[in-house]
Length: 231
Image 1: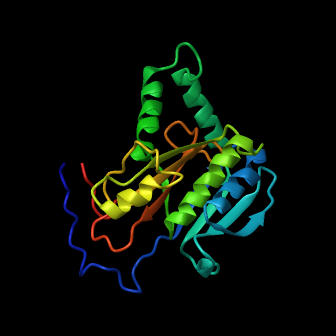
Image 2: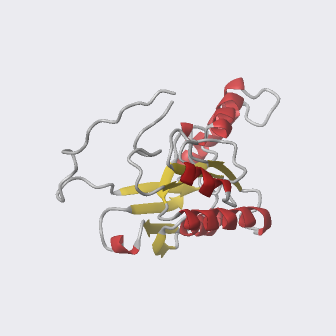
């Protein structure tokens, strides 16, 4: 097991005047998917601050928490895919034969990669403040994916537990309703990941779906899944 050392950032923390992560723009497909996509972002923990009805579909503004309501950072925008992008995605699908007997093998290989490693391509990660909050959210999403008309068949959930080695962490995860029977492991210790794949939000090279990542890091660990990568 190789440990890739992180750069020493002890003296590299940004000053209060430094850059911040400003905003991320996400898109849904048909106008009718807008409310469900916005509902999903709210379930993931974002705070909706604006909904602007537009002919092509609602425009939404979210912030990462209520403290960012009037700020210029920590913002997520959600709107309908522009028509030129819809046509481009359709043209790519046609050229690759997606959904036909002549589908390009690269499509299957790409989808298989994402099924095996959901963070291998574009994704958006959330840090959840407690493991209990994460577990409750994942159980809720599982229920919605099975029983809610807006979400049924449109959400796939994949979990990674922390690599074994810390007795307390291992015991807690063994008893977890989400991670207890999980056979997948993160690229590191002292943290867990849950990936939500959904076609309610369009992204990725094929414009098909978006991957959201929910992370929790156990407190007090010097090295964890978001600070050091283990190969």
